[in-house]
Length: 88
Image (tube, rainbow, N blue to C red; front, side):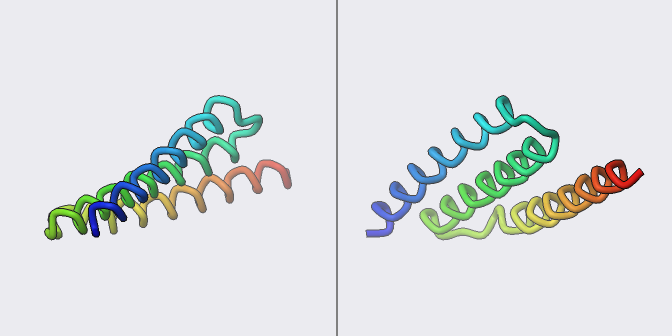
């Protein structure tokens, strides 16, 4: 049963990654591209979580926590930088 859920989740993550890559290449602004790359990092972390659930281990847990934290900090930093440039 868990294999079916992992396959469904994998297909959904694959579709999301295709949409993110499209936004990175097509995105009209730098904010769109940064947000798409942040979502791509979350998709990779989610795929690692799916692998951990399927194989019943926690080897990638530290990487997922660090990757999500760095993605959040990077997005906030870029958004502040862009908002400061628009105000100037």
